[in-house]
Length: 122
Image 1 (tube, rainbow, N blue to C red):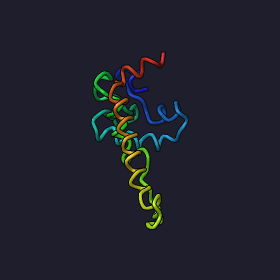
Image 2: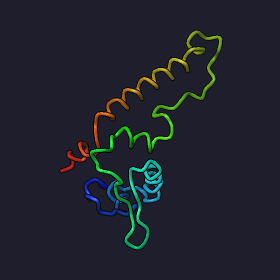
Image 3: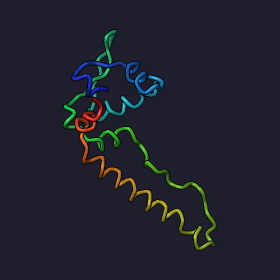
Image 4: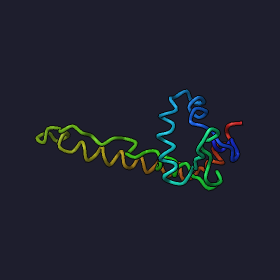
């Protein structure tokens, strides 16, 4: 929506209304985007958020890294049986699989700019 606004300012209420989630949740993600200088904010009655750089300069991988503070696939927290041939190795192999999957995802997101993605919404 920020890319479609063409430099205009949108509130977290506008953004939340589009995807039907609480504006507070939207603001939490916007803070991450602010920290990474992808968006800027305007205070006051007519305040809100806008893109801080051209949508052609923002890759979806940048957005992903900004809003995902942890891995897409979580690390296992269980403590499997160390005496089991599967159990003693499962977390290592799952972690490797999850890391490879996230690298593949980031590789695909790296290929797509926000401008290219927004073009789909006509």
